[in-house]
Picture (cartoon, helix red, strand yellow):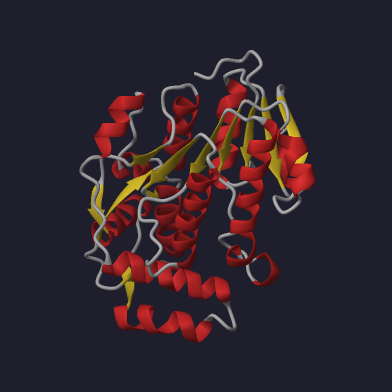
Length: 301
């Protein structure tokens, strides 16, 4: 666990799905936290003893530098994945992280942890995964002591938002391609636990840490588990791979976010992403990630 004396942690992207859980875990453990995000109204939900709120845009280097003063470590989860137009991640995320690296250098922050994705590549089909690789590259080139965390697919997104939500609302599960592609899944709560454990380990520096869970499972089998849990009728719609490949450039001029979601579907349908080595990091940091069965069995009906 992170020492509490003179060791305030800055959580960048604190109002996001993962950033909020990390902030709560650190606060509950008595670690002083500065929670940073753009919107003050959303930050208010994180107000707790020991949590300082900082409503700051990463593009404002002067204010960002001030927010880094008195900080020992930073855990950065911020992204604009659902942004479009002026707030598109393609326009703002890279510049924001360039500013963050500059602020870290200028204020003597001891270490920067950045949450990327296991699958980030400069040549992949998904724009935000290419972007994450370039952000990693900015951090590496900056000379800032760092750790890059690369988790596998979030259960909270692929189970809750993409499958279970459609079943609850429409009684239908949407599958990408034929559903046979295998992926590894990890819960947001477990990624947050890894982050907190690594914040407490000074020996982990200037390396990439891959994170995953025990479950390598096809999209079809994952959907079956969810259908059984929710008592669904078993209705499924498959989006063909050819459509997943051709649609993004056609719809991007009109709906950037929709194009991104379709490209994510293409990624899921065409790339098998098992992670048999998940236990290496789990054992190293003393985290026991849950299985998809455990996660699904806890879903509200």
